Length: 123
Image 1 (cartoon, helix red, strand yellow):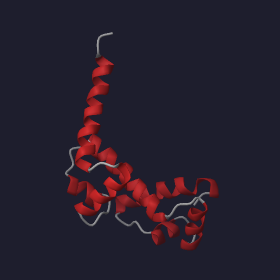
Image 2: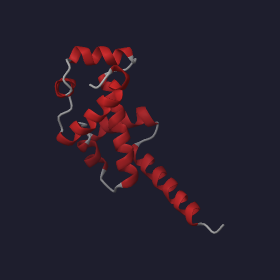
Image 3: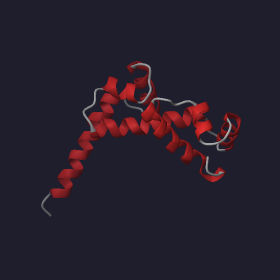
């Protein structure tokens, strides 16, 4: 990790890169970052967070982007983010956003259409 001030941001970037390969574990991330698992856990603890919380946050942000910007099937999104099944993805998404992935997709696209309509409305 870079330094203590941006541990979480550096971890998020490492997780994003690791999601592409499907290898997302605290051990892999710590090793690639040149630190130990314990040091990474301690640094995250100092910021009152954990690897699991940061990982879930990154996954949910990525899911929100995919839901709003693509037509990918929910199962494909769940799989690409490392969830073992759609149920686990849906529960995690609901826990963090308060909405099911399907509901989020509908609302995100509705907001996008409203933004476009406002942008091109006659003044």
